[in-house]
Length: 297
Image 1 (cartoon, rainbow, N blue to C red):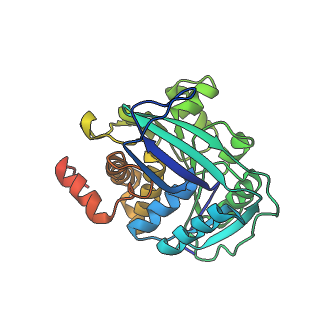
Image 2: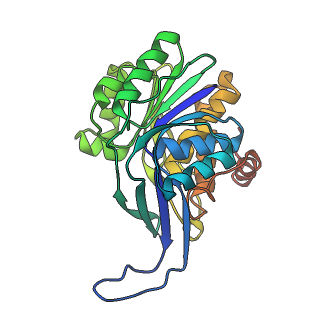
Image 3: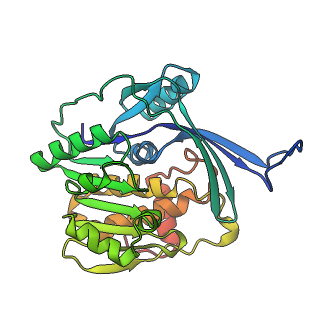
């Protein structure tokens, strides 16, 4: 095991359509995609596609959607350590004009305890705040072993404040700032106070503000993808997380400024594709993005 990801599994159904029907109306979608979903789950697949295959503790149901998810994991050779639930979770995603509406149906009533794995050889842990008991257990265990810990703070979840005390790299969404009634700048101060060595707030098309290992705050702008090329922004943040984890595993000496620049290119690739799986870049895809935008990376 070189990396461990922990999260909630979804099956994402992404539908591209002009408008949602209401009442007894019907409409025909322009396109659709069915894929794995969930923050840390999608990040794990992104990391695997780039060449570093992580282990994944994820929710799995004994139903046909659960079997479909495990089939996807086998294709990417991602070892799944299941935590069983009764029914698979679903996300219905409707991208439009650079935004996306999401309707979710989730089962997070676990039928068994989380698996306790041997962390021998593990170099990074990535969490999305789901499976709160597993997240805090592994964050503490990794902190004790000197294993880097990373968090996708997409929203305010149960034990997030306790969890932050064991996180080295905390990249949170602007939505969390809103939920905590903090400005992005104040959120960076909060992450510093919690002891996070690196912290950031993602702001969609406005990029990310973050502080580095020395506490210096800077702005990483999003790449200027033409509006007409943006198809589906859903999952872009997850791909961003998976890509910086890969970059860290591949070349830890480069520092997080370089890791985030690499991840920014991966996210720019994702938003041009419909659905999570189609939006997973290869190293060649990221190199092409770097050439397009004349990035030094």
